Amino acid sequence: MPEDTAHTVRARRPRGVCTDETGLTERQRRVIEVIRDSVQRRGYPPSMR
Image (tube, rainbow, N blue to C red; front, side, top):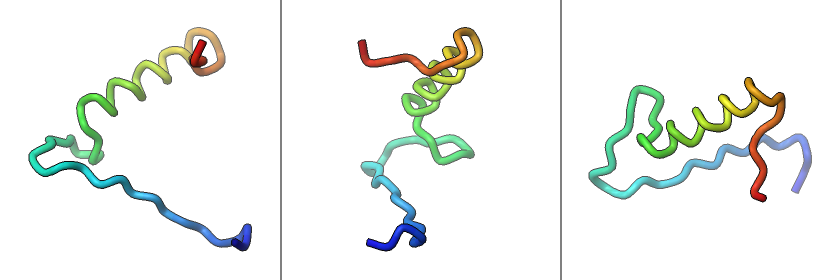
């Protein structure tokens, strides 16, 4: 696949799943908040360790 080709991947949400104005579920929004907080406090995202 050519490197210059841009692809957008969109996950399907099950019916009835509530999202906010960004299109994220509550759980997705909380995960992003944890990552942002970690980067802000430590300078890097959390690891899987």
